[in-house]
Length: 88
Image (cartoon, rainbow, N blue to C red):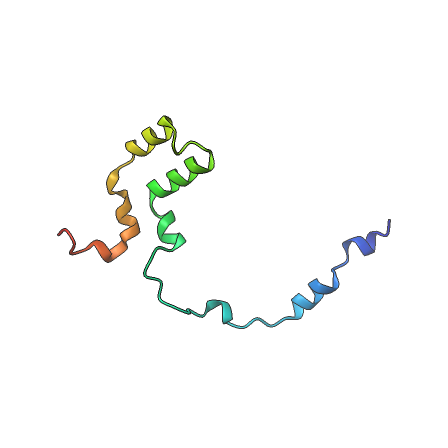
């Protein structure tokens, strides 16, 4: 086997190294009034439910009991500052 050929950078990788990136990926196209992944993952109930769903346990008695045991006010992390004034 030709060791040098195996570990050598591919032609497409060499082109990618020379590519100058612009800011197209950071342009905000529209205002997102909904949830972002960061806001969702900030909620413990969402994270636990996602893990239970991935494990196939979300609809089981165990999964429902686990979710019932979590504090119900934890979704205030999702709301961020939007809840202020709603119930205060």
